[in-house]
Amino acid sequence: MLTSLTRELLQSLRTALEALGAYALFGARLVVELPRALLRFGLIVEQMHNAGALSLVIIMLSGLFVGMVLGLQGFDLLERFGSEESLGTAAALGLLKELGPVITALLFAGRAGTALASELGLMRATDQLAAMEMMAVDPVRRVVMPRFLGGVLSMPLLAAIFSMIGIFGAQLVGVQLMGVDSGQFWSQMRSAVEFGDVMEGVVKSCVFGVACSLIAVYEGYHSVPTAEGVGRATTRTVVISSVVVLLLDYMLTAVML
Amino acid sequence: MRQTRAIELGTGLFVLLGFSALFFLVTQITNREFGLGDGGYQLLAAFEQVGGLKAGAPVSMSGVTIGHVEGIEYDFDEYKARVTMRIDNRFDRIPDDSDAGIFTAGLLGGQYIGIGPGGSETFLAEGDQMQFTQSAIVLENLISKFLFSKAAEQQADPPAEESTP
Image (cartoon, rainbow over all chains, first blue to last red; front, top):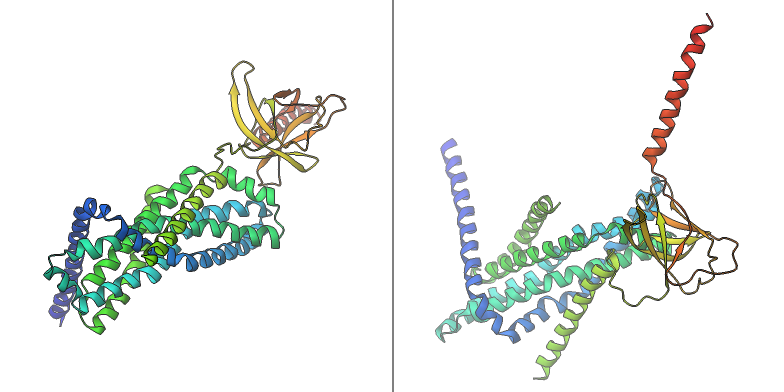
């Protein structure tokens, strides 16, 4: 009984280590392909359109509502201390450093990551990737790399747009609805927020972009070539991306704070 | 061909929007001034103590915001803090004997400069220095002054109490 349990535990530990190793090898392969892939600019633009431009609506809508909720909750909280003028600072720092990068990454995993994984999975299931290899076209170079880079390049831009819209959402509720003084809102925000705070968000969103894109292309590329396998790859993409993003967020915050 | 053009256009717009958002965050949300040609004229004031005043803080007259603090430097000629303010052009009739003080908005609020108008007939113009300034109140100084005065009172009292019995 006990031995079988230990054996199972060891087995699952081994599977996890194997998966980590496979991810690292796949990532290393992408890094090796990087210089050559950057030359195929047209392909990257196409994938930035898929991952970035088409995610704009959901990012902007979510940013607006997150900002508005932040304005409402922040006002309610700060009013108790009689310092509702600090609402701008609270909203801006919260959005720039945490909510912007993290929520954008989660939405990105749901919107663009799943699309990448299912697309690659279906290519695998319908033997398109095998056909490419047959024609001496490296599918990693031709198919995976542009998708990965498109995601990596889109993510920081999406996070910046999210934060900007969020701050306007907070301003909308705080200043227009709740009557916080507009000048105090902006000037306190400006005097409290440093250049480094903006950069912290940019660094975070870059890291999240790499993580989410890598997970999506890996899961899609290595999916089991069946209908069920594609579905499972898509699910795994979202689950792994979300957990990894939150884990990385804690680590990055601890390092940069 | 037409489709790829549309894709490129969409991506271009997305990238433009992304970078303008970044630019907005860096220039408008932080206290970095990139001098995007904001109008108004500059006034100088020397303070003994600026406390927590920061660039970007409002300058107000009777509670109306008329400009903002542009920069704070240390002036080794006068051994004081030199504050440069940018005042909106609409408020061009500030008497040249007005005084500037540093106040705090609310208990936890940020600090701002309040200008009290004087009675002179001539007005401040670009680059003028304000004559009368009132430093920021540093809470620690206030508390220590209060404590020291209390201590002095107590030191003065005991002999008087001992002499009575």
